[in-house]
Length: 276
Length: 251
Image (cartoon, rainbow over all chains, first blue to last red; front, side):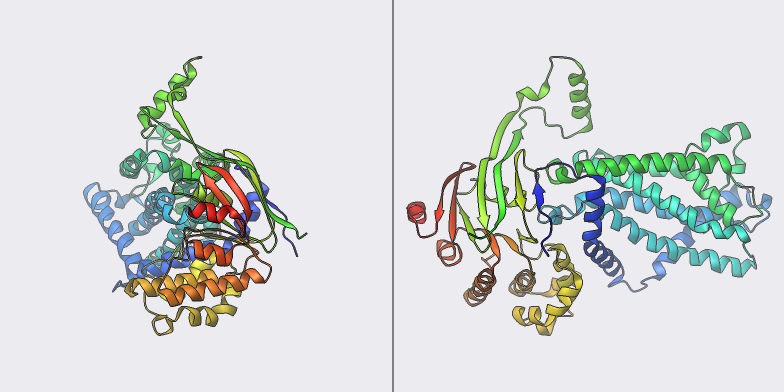
């Protein structure tokens, strides 16, 4: 069967055409994911254990800072390590996925300059690889539940939805950063710095309830607030009520930004090499 | 007459040689934005233009192999990059019918930490070859490359010759209707080069079409049916490989 003609005129593809091409090149995506997973753990002695070690250590550091020094842990009805895990694991993913996707297009320039596949595949696969680590890290939470003899309630059925929202947020910001980094390497300096600040204005080691009530709305403009508090609601049901406003704010931010990011990506797809 | 598989019309690629105001930082970009807001102040007017390829038109019919020749910087690689969709053309268009495999480089996507086996699949996927198809040709690829013993060794331990052989073996086994090839025949020792040439000639004889860039005129003579001579980004002469063009070019 003859495939339809391919017209090369430098125009950006339509949504539909782009979706078809993403599907047509799914093999490339799968191979890149496999490559990254293999390369990350080949020649490492501890292999997958690294994926647990890092968030675990972060959790202990936060127990020290917020629990021991600031004395937050006495006020929660749920074991404090579990409260922290719900923040640390999404944050850890976020703080890895952003720089990784930001550097993805620039880092794959040697491939991009030699062959064509939809450029969005590169930042997307990088995020998928980080998502593998993210899911793996929840083992820590499961161990924690066994250790403290804690059982999540029916709300845990909503866990996948918050994962989805987190991935969408990372993808949206990641696509923007990947494109911006092509021309302005400034973002390479900016992002790690913003992440350091972001850590303190995100409820990782503490909870939203620590924020004075009349400031909570502004605090929740940070789209991660709704997601992390959502995880806490879904896994630690007894801890707080459903954080409706933060989740809605985050959902609005995520979907708007996601839409714009994808449209921007499709628009600049043919220009990626020239922009660098 | 057989069907036209590649039609190129008025293809051009312009680059801007940015003299003073290279927008390589956020600061200059913001300033340029500010300038643009003021009517009549167009910063870009100071840029010098350079056409790497200009008004290039060509048709390739099924079974033909067009060799593109020309000096360095005459636009050969720009042409192949546009046809491979790596960079967009500034003007004109090209229409391609059938599956295209671009070999702008052998071993695109090879990763040093991956084994030969893993790299075969990675590289093949980037050349647009489905995994199933590569599975079917795997033995043939390994055989062609002659690196069977080292298949499960990371390619960072390969000698450069072995690396190139493996890379070319994958490229040679990609099934496509149209091949776009940039100087990739310059690999390996004489014997391997002959093997590659033989393989390419065979696949061309099976009705595939190709656009090949080469500086090696004997390769051009043995492969190509037509020659396109590029000069300063423009098509200078085009004709059958038997015509005077190659003779003039060599002179």
